[in-house]
Every structure is written in C-alpha cells, then in structure tokens.
Image (tube, rainbow, N blue to C red; front, side):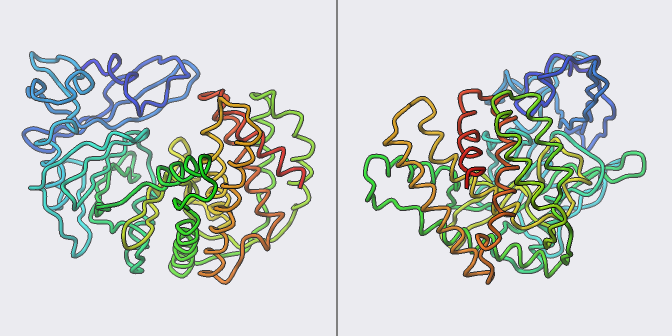
Length: 430
C-alpha cells in the first residue's frame, strides 16, 4: 500500500493542517486503464472529523516528471507510485476517458452533448490552485480534478451546465465530467470546460491598477471601465440562473450570520468591540423579505477572467470546506455583489498592510470606492436593479463577509487582519 500518510499532508490542497491525523489510508481504488488508478484516501482526525481525498495514481515513470519530488507518493510492490496529474501522458489518458464517455468500475465519464475537445493537445499543470488540481490542454480545454470530494451534486458542474445551456457568454462552456458512487449517492470527481485563452485574472488586473493609482491618481490604467463591464456580466449571470432555476422570497438569514459572528468573536479578540453594533445591524433586518435564487456564493476578483470578448465567472463550487448540499442553497444575489465589493477593498488595501501612510490609505480607499461604484453601475444597467438601493441589506452581507474574512486572516495571515477590521469599522458607522 502506498504511504499516503507521509505524502498527503504535504500537498497544497490538504485541508487538515490544523488538526492531528489519526489515520490516513486508501479507502477505495479503481483501475481506469492499464496505467491510471483512481484512489480515494480517507483522512481521519483525533477530533473525530474526517475527509475524503481523490488521488490519480500511476507508477513507474516518476523519473520523467518535471515536479518529481512533489508528485512522488512512495514505493509499494516494488514500484514507485506518483500523482498522475503531473504526468502529461497520464493526464491525456484521463481527458480521453472523459471524451469517450462510459465507465470504469464505479467511475462514470460523461461528455456533454455535442462537446468537442481533443486529448492529443499538450497538457500543462495549472499551479495556482489551492483546493483542486487543473490541467490545461493547449488553448482548448481545462481539466479540473476535485481533490477533496463529497457526495451530492457539485454546484460547479451543475451551474456551468445550466448556464451553458442558456447560452450565457459569461462562463466557460462545460465539456464533460466524471463521478463515482458512494453508499448509493453520487460523488463528483472532476470536470472539463473550455479553456479561456488570452484571458487575464481579475485579481491581477485590479491589483495592477490599484498599484498604478498610488503612483499616479490620474493613471490611464483605470480599472473602473472593466469594473463596470464586470458588474454587467454578474447581473446577466444572475438573470440567467433565475430564469433557468427560479427564484423565491425568504427572510434575511439572521441565525446564520449571528452564528458566524459569535463563532468568530470567540476566535478573534479584535472583532469583539464591534459585535454589539454588528448585531444591531443584523437584527434590524429580522424578517426582512428578500429575493433568493442560485448564485455563485463565493464570488471575488480571483473568480473572474477577462477575455477579449467578455468577463467570465469561474469556480461555482462554493466554499470547499462546506458540504455540497449547503453550497447549493439559494441566497440573495447581494451575496455575490458583496463578495465583489469586498474584493475591491482587498485589491487596494492588501498592498499597504505593512505601511502606515494616511495618504496612501486614502488613495487606496478612493480606488476601491471608484471601482465599487463602477461595478454597481454596471450591475444596475444590466439588471434594472441598483444594489445600492438595498443599502441596509447589502451592508449586512458585506459585514458578514468581512466577519468571515477576519476569521480567515486571524488563522492564516494575521498581518492582513486589519483589512476586514477597518471595513467593519467603516460599515457599522454608516
């Protein structure tokens, strides 16, 4: 048996670093062809929690891998096993299985109707992901393999399929997917979409613009025009989802936001002085009716791509650590709007986390305000609804997002904690 217990904790996408493993072992293995094996690895922790991970395993060819040290899992049965997604030939084999359709053991491969993609293209690993692993094939397709897997319907596959069938120009077309079954429930394992050639990530574009604006407030590298177009794109995606999957009315989720607030306050002392004011803002919305529908639910500048033709929304899977059934719950479209507005704050202020310069801080806030306004203007133009008209509800969603950010920063980037804290102070004083 391969030594997954030694290899798994060193992977970028491993989510158990804050816990103590009790057992990490193979839970199931399916031979996909004469080279590939799909292995599900069960990680159990001393606190009683557990996670299930997916690893594509091949053996014998690790000497030819570009990332040999990272890919090599270890020896078993006289052969060296390695993560097959680092092997171009093995990645091509996996894409060919999706393209052909059919099944291997309990694993089912399903190309989308009329989908066209070629497994003969040269693959390259996309190395910027934290939760999954993707392989890009030429300029045509990208194969995303889910690392931490759950039973249920995956919203990334589901919503990309829905939006592709509406003809939305603001998503990368879904080409295929594959899944297995656990205890009678579907367990999504991966997907293939069209690759957005000649695209730029929204986060990179925004931070470059913010940096330029510090040096020259009148810089021609003004991102506001793109923010307007991005607001239009998000509004159109929301409209397509509402038409395809419907909408409803529901009260503001008071219990959920208060639970997150109190949990974060126990963990982050710096947020405690703001708790009474935040509670007051939340409780003022008790029973407030709002429109809910399927939304992206984890939208920010790192989840959008700018192509020559349009802005694209990507990664509809939601928060990776949340069960799939919870990620698929309808919510207000303002959840996505608030996520984008918070992301503009981050794009500007993360550049100044090590500085105490009032002039630069004011410049950063001016850049953020200008782009937040442009995004809302674009959203209003495309949807007929200006998010700022629901000011109290939008602010509540922004505060809830900032509370989440405070918990994240306290755990992972304490130097960045000031970004959500200063936003919370500004929002509750409005």
